[in-house]
Length: 162
Image (cartoon, rainbow, N blue to C red; front, side, top):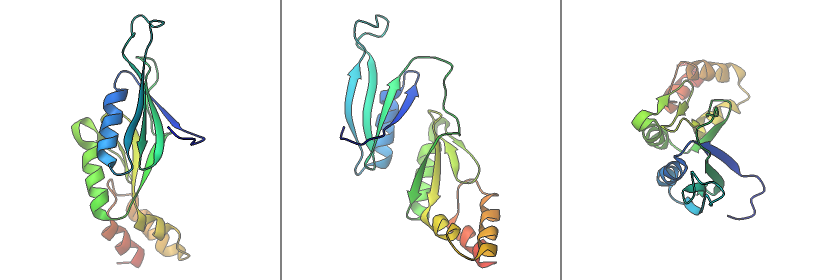
């Protein structure tokens, strides 16, 4: 890993390597597994098993830990937000991240099959939210509040008052 000052650290019971490989496959491009560490004999029950996996998603560094079963689990108070250039990218990420046990949430949020929360956000939504036309923004936000996966055409139509 490089000298990124802050790295997101994700606790998995025992699926850190599987999750990291899945995420790398989803985002491709500047995404890769950067390294793996294993538990030593100091942890007799886990000796030789994967302890951490360092990985990069779209240039951002993460570490996944196989921390064992504890009272820790992911929740929506932390999520990874993905800037999507198009509806097609939103659709593809939504389908992939909700597959195999993932769950759709409101307003562009979802949980993947590992329980990690994501916000799949079309760039158009960020553009709409930055508008000075507050009434138009309110209409678009009202439309968003009724959506699960965000729909660019529906957001634009609401923004335009259609």
